[in-house]
Length: 173
Image (cartoon, rainbow, N blue to C red; front, side):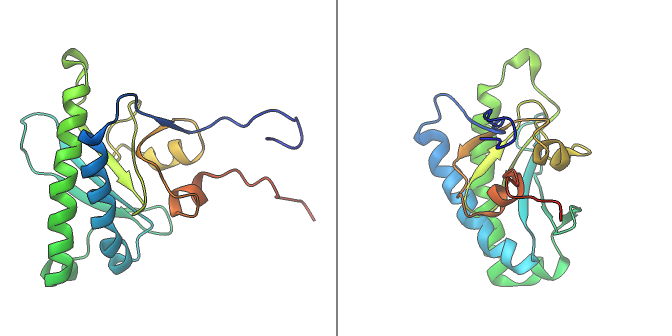
């Protein structure tokens, strides 16, 4: 509730109708796989993106650092056994999530790429801007200009919630 106007604030997270176990299980595994990667990279969010054609093409894993830059995973993480195993689990679960999303997309409106974002607790995507690699994707979603669809609910104490929550107690001194 906006204290100044007494009106409800616009929600930027919506849920995907019909998200059953077909998306919830791999989305949960994706979020779990992201946790060690986020910790090791000191990232705030991870993203997984794949082209929609040809199917089975290479996926791109990136992370947002604390200053909002979208970066590839550091090279040292790819040589570390534990990080490589986490990355493999993350990408396998992510591929299942992306395949399910592509199947639900209208064939005549399939975007060139589709991706998801996670803070290690929840998983979201955007039907308005389906690729998190889109310029200003993060800004569009953090400001509420573009809604995020929750495939797995984000924790209220997680990074996504802290980034997207309105600052109701902001005061001018």
